Length: 334
Image (cartoon, rainbow, N blue to C red; front, top):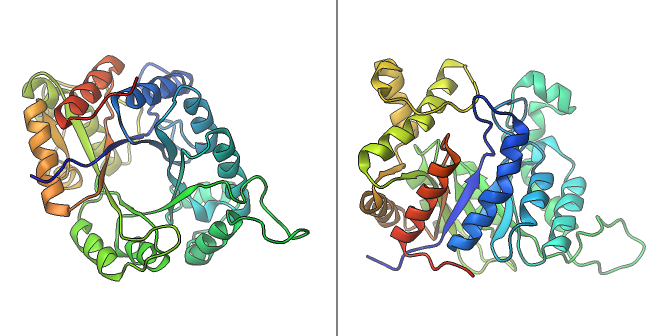
């Protein structure tokens, strides 16, 4: 087995049944501080709109809140849905974050709007804006360049702020754009793994070195649930499975507690589709999770894993992250 790669965490700041967004947002800094201590490489949050169960719509605000409790881990968006925003304004937001947390800010960019048509109208954008995504990415990168001439429009305090820009994707489109622009690439295999191998192969074969990145760097997403026993991990994982089943049913309720019998919850077709969406998940005791991650690393040649660990009980989630970090051999900080 090759040397184990870094682990990072994508936190959807999920709102639990029986609780509210204030509870979820209050726990985000605790989670960021925990994975910082455990030796994780990054703590990311993601932009979603019109979803009561996810409290991270304002990514830069959540990161500023969570970042205050961290010292070394990188913080960032995984990601910002750029068609919803003016690149100039995103540069201002993330340039500000980079001045508060110098050398520690990532900006992952997605092409999907992250919501429905009705909400897009409320945001004051359209689905067609996604067709301008490549040009918007190039413009955004420009706003972070050091200011060479006085008197021109600049997205202060972004120029020279040192934000690492990432391309996100679940298809070959993002892979091709990341390769063309010489950017690191993160594949969303934690919920859409079908094109994982094809996208990574395209990204690596077409990669053009840039001032930002000399060689391809690929991050692979996966759900992870680790507990002292395999049976307990499987029970905890039913919270994740219920959430994905709810997506299929159009029933986006708040995060649900685990159930003892998931088979009685879903229909066979739903089970098969959820299983396909979660095909890259690693669930079990520490040995099983380590073996699952090792197999995924061997398959993909990933340079880094972006984990999701969406569990209802905060204590069980913290324990899962602790067990995963220890199983993978992360070096704790401080």
